[in-house]
Length: 99
Image (cartoon, helix red, strand yellow):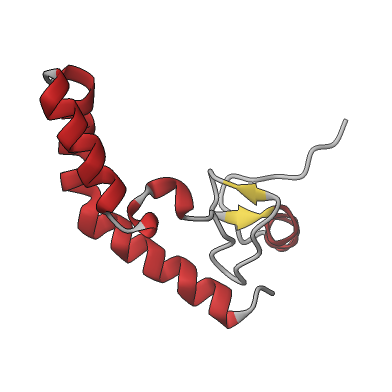
């Protein structure tokens, strides 16, 4: 189980990313296609934004206990939690392999 502070910080980052997402996308488009002066201004503005506004700062965590490692994106769970839930039959469509 991850510490509550780590989980809370990650949730705050998600909120900041959502708040700045539209403006960051616009600035990145300007950096790709604008004139050199527009590009320089866009880069400066991107640098002035909070660090947590970048989506790469958000960590994928297990939705049940917040474990940061061994995350399975399809299910939103860590490998350990996935295995436990699959064995109990709590994941629809997931069966144990046998051959």
